[in-house]
Image (cartoon, rainbow, N blue to C red):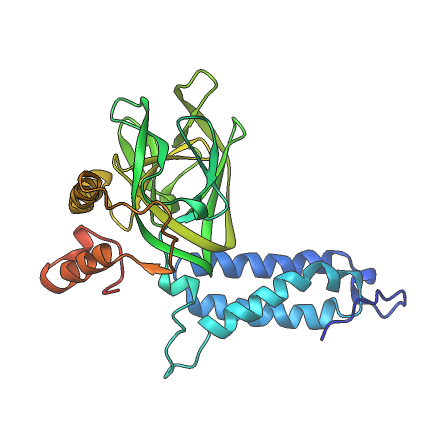
Length: 306
């Protein structure tokens, strides 16, 4: 167990060399970046080095307080992701399960101007989206494809020059203009711009100031009638794990038909709470593709059956 006492003796290695804290944090950052690329072995090696760094360079010092949160989180990740060769990686390892969603803490806007947390969205709610001509339009939430309010996931957090920020998992599509979308992991701040809603109610391009990789807990994938969504006022697709937004929208057509049928017969329950898990339809669709399509990689970037 860590001690909160800050040493004032010459034996404290961080007091002798303050840069030691940064060296430990750098190891942690490198490990997370490698994990996002699927290099679990490198991540586990870096995690081991980070924990050894904390032991030898920060124990009993101010640095111990500084890195305590990272160490606790890293231990949890290591237990789920770093296993022996003959053992199966835990299902909750965020580097393997690779959920494709938004952060629960991000928000969407209603046509009346209210903001709703992604995690609080319900089927049938009206929210703002954008159409093929980049016009802001009202749309309706028709399904929650994936929801988990506890598990960790790695997010790419984009900050624009206009001050807007949004977090998406690596394979979630984000809008870059001219009806083009790209997965979050492939966004290049030098080549791409994001589109944000301005005070005049129009979408405008904004350069990307920074891209950070962050570990957050909780994620959700809401789907709208139009397949698009404005999250934290930034234009995004509702779809992930595919190469083309249009294919995703076509594939989700049955969900739109089901929702419309429920509307006709008054069967939509707007008080229904979100439950952890993956919606049956995308799970079944993904498994069919991986079972019967010769080259599933042409259509989806999922690793296999769900």
